[in-house]
Amino acid sequence: MRTKILHRKVLTMLSRFKSRLLVLAAALGLTLAAHAQSFPSKPIRLICPFPPGGAVDIASRAIAAELSKNLGQTVTVDNKPGAGGNIGGAEAARSAPDGYTIFMTTSGISAINPFLYAKMPFDPMKDLLPVTALVSLNNVLVVHPSVKANSVSELIALAKAQPGAVTYASSGSGTSIHMSGEMLKHLAGINMTHIPYKGSAPALTDLMGGQVMVMLDNIPSALPHIKSGKLRALATTGAKRDPLLPELPTLAEAGVSGYESGVWFGLAVPAGTPRDIVAKLNAEAIKGTKAPDYVKRMTELGYNIMGSSPEQMGEMLRGEVTRWGPIVKASGAKAD
Image (cartoon, rainbow, N blue to C red):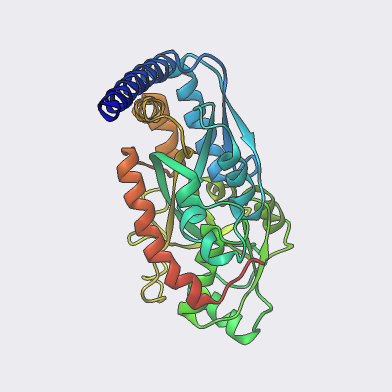
């Protein structure tokens, strides 16, 4: 008898506990839903992991302007350059997962940095959630006008004649600009000395000043200086000629067999950000990429507009890891 009574009491307690759990779960669900519906209720910070003036910064400011319109809250760009994007990425990963910190990531940060840095301050694939892939672009091989090379073949000949004497700038170790240079060295069989900077803009400044000789910069940031004659363009890095520089051959056309390199940028948020908020940021960002002013400005600067679901962006990142891992390892490049 006592056993039956005790059994009934236990069942009653379990039933009450289960009911309370269901009430709590429902309340939590309602709270999260209400939070997502009211989001955003204050300004949002968009971390750009490179300094002002470069291609990542240009893309960050363009989408921030569209998100500000669409979300009804100011989206401010906060530049946190250094370590090939790792400093900004680590700060984003440590931020509260509430949608009020978003991050302009690059395919290089997720797919190249983990192979380049012995100690990563965060895990790009685990500590950040994809929101949407925004834009892609090619790089362009540019030299200071004093460099005695008017073609890719002449630059290769110069580098072979003076191993290590040709210096090439990058926006930081591990960036697509750096690895584009490493790919050129590997495929052309030349030795150039890498000079890393904390972003494309300071690298371009020194390139135009003659402190360094060569750079494989993103087209949007290099284009004005090519047009002004401050830099000489020799080739682009894509699989086919770039529509903004159609007169230039690709590096593969110029004799570097198998060469193809590019980069894309996208938005991410700290892991743990509610799914509804990720979905809202995705929808408003994609809406922004279709705005006429955005489309006009970005295409004129050389960006290819993308737009994707979070799931598609995740698949793209995993594909980049598979593609770039062997290239980084073969180059022997290390950032530490």
